[in-house]
Image 1 (tube, rainbow, N blue to C red):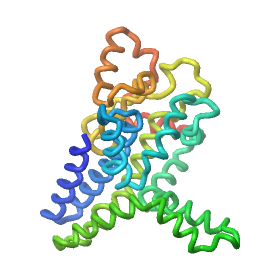
Image 2: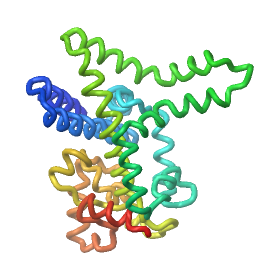
Image 3: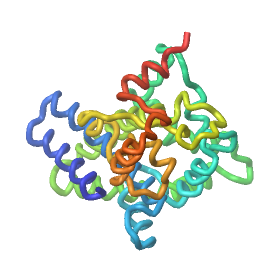
Length: 283
């Protein structure tokens, strides 16, 4: 799956390089942005020990081939995410803030979409913490120290991007680093990440005692799987019930639950558009 994610990124970029026009560029941005989300999803898989039976290999793959390229950290993400599983939809759930704003109005949802597609969300997430620390710094912590601390924290991400830039420049495609890596990361990646978060936990009852209803499963079409929900991330209710089940076995888990007549207890949606309509139905 890790090789598949990178393979799709390379093929989507090659498509635009070979046939440069607005349509192939838009398609490349969407495909690459969705696979950047795919890398984040596979980092999530690594957080559950699901990429490889050897934990060192699992963590190495998750950290350096999935997390670092997109600016994440498996080491930081794992305890945070396992806390989310332990307290799903309870007051202690660190992800509760993501579902709290819903339902919202259609206008509010569109404002969020516009912020994602114009790079505002990316800028806030990438530079917001640094700007916040600069504002709060004391005289004993000069700006240079703040920048140095942030550079160390972001070192894997910076090294990955420097490597990509050098490699692409060596084959005369220096511009592709920005056009076919940073632009998808600043636009489509934040949008589909938001859609994923909404589909998984928006409008899920707080303090829900039934584990069948701690998350939502969304039936994803082939197009939605390609552009919004890669690597079976749409089977989120099953994932919360059996969090160490490898993601490629979640469709099987869903079929087994259906055979036992248990899927009627679950929160499900026929597609991502239906979830968005429900999530933006507030007056």
